[in-house]
Amino acid sequence: MSEYTSPEHHPAFEEYCETIFELAEDGLKVIQARIVERLDVSRPAVSEMIRRMTDEGLVETNGSVISLTDAGQALANTMVRRHRLAERFLTDILGLSWAEAHHEAGKWEHVISPVVETAIADRLDNPTTCPHGNPIPGSTYVKPDLVALSDISVGDNVTVNRIPEELEFTPGLLEFLEENQLLPGASATVVTSSPDGTTTLDIDGQVVGISAFTAERILVTQA
Image (cartoon, rainbow, N blue to C red; front, top):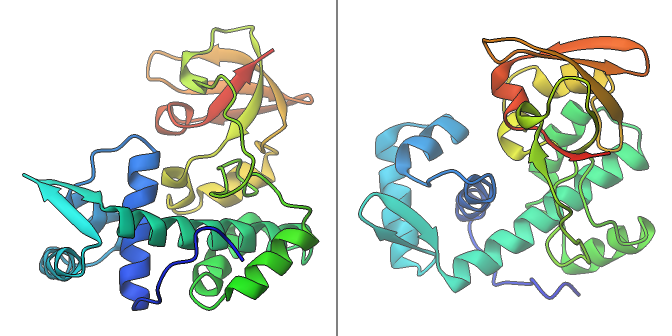
């Protein structure tokens, strides 16, 4: 059984804890407006949910900033772990695309039991990351020295390491990255870097251009 087992909560609480975890993981200030944007719900709905979660002891606020309590963090760890294990299972074993796996894992995470969670991890030989390179809570993940792709100089070689959650929620982007082999483990050379932040990469002879928004968020290691 996972060390991140936590009491059962309403799926909405699970989703909000997971969202707060992911926003903080990406280095974003967790405020209601960002939750509204990520979950595509109304501001009043988020405000009411945060109030309920505060009463449940899952979150606390400091001015406009929202953070998880120990109980909220435990619940978030459980949900993120199950989501990322599900994504890995759906891609590695069932052969789903990144986008399909991300969508389906959002359903699976709420119904995976501790027994099934352990079985999936064992079947996958205890992976440390999801298909996009994001760490699985409770695994033996060790963070490498990472830099944003936008900080790499023209002519330098890199290895793609992580596609942060913020990019997973950008419509169409997972499909684009997968189709163009911008996957964790892929080797690339920075060909150009435009004044507007657009970065052009050479990946096995294929030239791919990505926006400043994307280049600032993809994390790589330098060769």
